[in-house]
Image 1 (cartoon, rainbow, N blue to C red):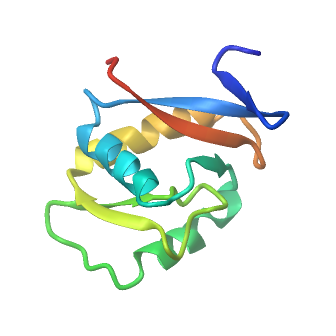
Image 2: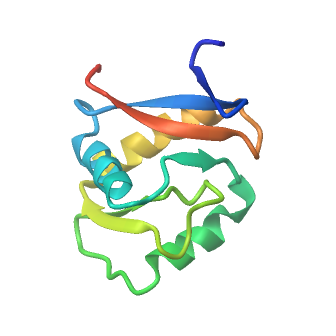
Length: 121
């Protein structure tokens, strides 16, 4: 199997690493959301991201100085209504978002991926 990919049920799943040291609040939110029953295997679908983001954040008030972090990510087909939302530090949220996006940039829509929380930097 190629580096950075795990194979599950015959299909490749891209492993996206997220540092718990760099993004403690995002990492914790992902772990909690998965423990609460959100799926851990996601599918890239960038086209529907803004409508899914709107659906997942509907009715969740903004709080000055905090970001509304979503898991399931809006860029995944599984995101949208029913996603877990947590208010977290904006730099943590945006940093983890760009880290995940950067790692997935070369993969097309339809690619399956999993966010793996690491203790590395």
